[in-house]
Image (tube, rainbow over all chains, first blue to last red; front, side):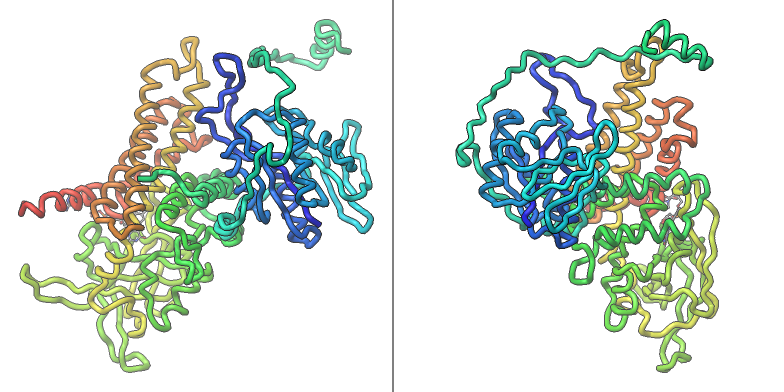
Length: 249
Length: 391
Ligand SMILES: Cc1cc2nc3c(=O)[nH]c(=O)nc-3n(C[C@H](O)[C@H](O)[C@H](O)COP(=O)(O)OP(=O)(O)OC[C@H]3O[C@@H](n4cnc5c(N)ncnc54)[C@H](O)[C@@H]3O)c2cc1C
């Protein structure tokens, strides 16, 4: 089984995000970048499948600027086999990324796409679903557990009301949630091996995909600072405030 | 000139940061509180370090080590240097001098140390011989009592010896004779490999230093301790030459530790300056605070460049004693200033044991003393300047 893991290069989760003065987006100059944490979880799961013998090959794919190579290398150092970079300096919207990924899935003949449920930059939570729709494949989103069986794949989804268990036919698209696993950090021998692994580069044109934007960003503003809370001295006071001030109970 | 890190170096730094964050930082408070390393903790960190390939990463691949180039080793030392010294010491980086092992010594001492099965310590300093190592009085005399009719009998004492409590053997420097030189008689020093538990060799804990809790310098006492002639490391009478060949780079690693620790202190100080409010604004808005931060960042960058440059020259086979001395001198003194400023920026909180800062400040102090004091480093640098002029 060939597993494809799309990964996104985003601003490191520990960096405090600042909106650019001209309100066109967030500041990315001189800011530490890293692999989206949900993508890391997807890479980890794919590498575990490889180690367990359920996956035969793990291919990392990223769409973005040339530096996305670094993010792919991080995945290769975790244990993936090779990489594909779809290089585009233009900002890519979820639908464009889904179309690019569809082209790579078909080119590679992948059996399973394992990806993050969302990227922590835009928090869009769209690409996996769109990809599944474009491919006409079953999808399992927000998964916290996965088990390969003879007929397909059994996944546990984290939904609002609790857990939902689905049996999916293969091929499928899965988007992973936080509790699926704890991603490893690369070992020195794997870091040394990562450099020798190949990364093939394509452009959106090579894949025949039109990535021109369909959305227009009017402006980006920081959320208003949160007001300080108040301490109440008793449960009765809290209930009173909730009932009479906030009017929520 | 290329200052960029390679892909491997970038990945190594990322991975080391995760290791330090997940495996070392969480245990710092315990080590500071108890002053000890629990055996289970040592086992756990060591196992993880071996699994990650960080253990003995400094040693060549053909010996089973990680095969890091010197700049990468400096980056490793910088990242590990951020954590408690006692904890980061568990991630073994065998002393390079063990590469002088020959014959049976390779299997007996070098390879098991690279594999993490044995641990070494390095014993030079004595109560009467610190900066002036040649003043040492521990002596090893040829003694016909060994199985092959050769061997040595050792008498004397070493102090301030790191890791001796945990170590399985020591690399010992002792006097084996006197030679006549143009400047008068001079002691001949030989390096030996001596196993803990050899009759006549006792290890005991010495006084507790203010820096690096959980890391206990020890006293080594030799009373008619008999060892074989096959335990000489390198050539008889040429111990300092062996040390100079293999230990010159140690000062770069000390410098790299200092750079890492200073970066941690700066990060803490910046965070505090950006959030602590007095007189209605964050203290970072007062120039008295912000200019300190600017100086700290600048000095850290300068020390880092000196350190990585010395490591790079080492890799080129072009490092001089003064390159390593300058890096060690500047980085260790910089760390003293940076941690002191950081405490000042924190105010009273900077002195409290609940935060890592007071420890970084205490720990900084030893760096100007061990592996050659600041004065000795200045001596090395100034002699290199003046010697060509006959001064
Ligand atoms: C925690 C700790 C761990 C250690 N671990 C080890 C270890 O594992 N193995 C080991 O062998 N040693 C170890 N040492 C010893 C360390 O290397 C020595 O402390 C150091 O070399 C200085 O020697 P000293 O303490 O005897 O000071 P001294 O040499 O007595 O120096 C006292 C002062 O005189 C100054 N001075 C001396 N000579 C000169 C000069 N020529 N010009 C100008 N000033 C001079 C010094 O700079 C210093 O300020 C350790 C020390 C400590 C504190």
